Length: 414
Image (cartoon, rainbow, N blue to C red; front, side):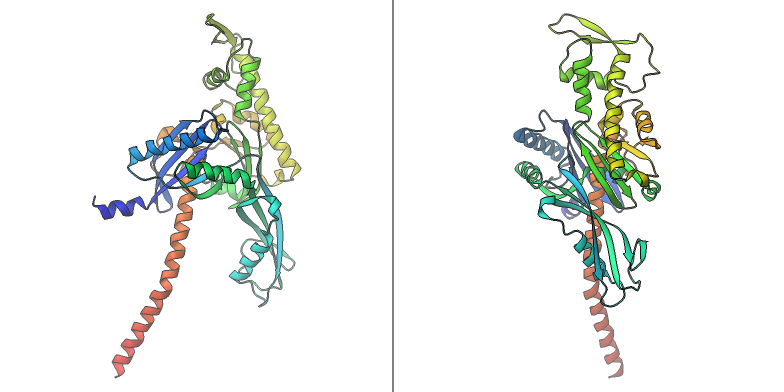
């Protein structure tokens, strides 16, 4: 491959950075039209996600490994963002139509008015327009070209606390990278796991990770609601550390959760046990796997109940007709979808990344949904940018062709 082709190909590379509470994923993909080919994934444990220098060092380590394996410079990354500091607000806007017909500029105007959030709301990450109203008519998806006097819209604005955004940006910049864009993590996950039918009906996506459990409700291409709680996988690990009949460290409890953890209690043999190393090299202690399953299931059920209460409090549960989709590392727990089904009383499935080429079987895992989804989101942004650039270029080309045609007519008749 010659240098020019190599350079052209490098422009098609896209990068997604998912910084979780226990691990960091750096995904590399290549845009192939509407599709994305996953080239590489750096999966790195985070020793301390709350320590600034530790995160910077891990990002740098990830970048070095990825650059060595792909021979492509990693610079502009799309970064996932989630947590309790992320909020969603519903705002309404209404404008008078000066021409009596809805134009593109009227749609832009009403969206800007509706998304003019106060500074106290935080920094805007996304603005999702919902349905429009035109005079007395409601539930309009695209009002362009219709006649009327007043155009209204309800938008969902997703914001993040400003200092949290600044600190995240600082870490990434300190590691030598640029932020191409921040993406709500459930939105990124949705790009890789949701179906068109689920979106059309209304679906809640729950990203159940180590540090937080985040939920976002989607209707078509719009996020209607998002919230987060600090109860997630790390709390389950802490429960295991405290509640087994032998004291163990958090790291050992995490290992036990991954190896022996389950939410399917009824399928366990009554006296089934697993070995746990006792403190001070005193040999192994046999612990009940049923006790472990009860510890895990109780906390998982509580986490789902807290999320369900938030959905009901916002009266958003009534539009979730497409069910619940679970993603995130905790989805590796056997039977977790059955617990969710009991709590939410809706159909539940595990969301695995799909629809993109180059995904090895190991990446078709719920814990990679956000990282791969970031590539999907980045690809969509790149395609829209190219489309806009092409449209701008077509105007001068049209003028040029028109002038050439005019010259040909003059020559013909002179």
